[in-house]
Image (cartoon, rainbow, N blue to C red; front, side, top):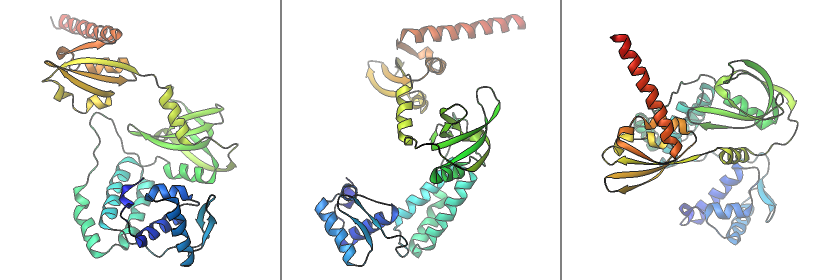
Length: 329
């Protein structure tokens, strides 16, 4: 339950419930109770009050509530905190999506600004230049003008099949596929499409920046697909992770910076002059190469095979240095 609504007076609460009814097709009483930290009895009483005030609420307790088609509230005023939150979100949208989504969000934000009070407008203008979203230098990120996000979401909304020209990351070949989109997600520095691929007759992940062309067909989806979250849960469960424990000289730990989080940082504890750090990594080889950056000030506690990987890399570096020395003499 959201404690922000605990002290809400009845007028504000009725408006909040009305906004919730307007923003969803159907909402159950128990969902309203959880969202606004109310008892079911209070929800039933508030919905009845809205009906008596002339709001066309459809439904009843147990089945859920909705508003009659076509009913709309007059423009809603946003407070300063809500307007600031929208402005902050716009910075993320501009940085992490494509030109299409950014354009639509900017248009929506302009409509929000249009109904703000003068004091809120002034506040937004004053803080606009004081919010920024930066990309970490360790992550390669190239802004894309077209990630097809809007078209994909339109296809999901209409349950339509998409035809895509996809450049494979594996063999650098382009294939034409018809896919049934399930959802999109952002990971690392890329957007991905989860879809049922008719060519492979299975669910696949597609990086949207590798979709060279995309078109919406008039063909309906062949079946009802599981929700996106079920694929996210399956991906997390299938991913093999390795526990890594290393002892790092205490004075060196600060230099690991944010890189430790990108390599699966879990926890740490100080033991004498060293800090014992635990990681969960999806790639021992990747971790071993990162470890080389501070390996002269650290000791691998586990696993044993990580020591072997680091030793192999070190031997390879030493061999190349020796060969270079021979060429110079």
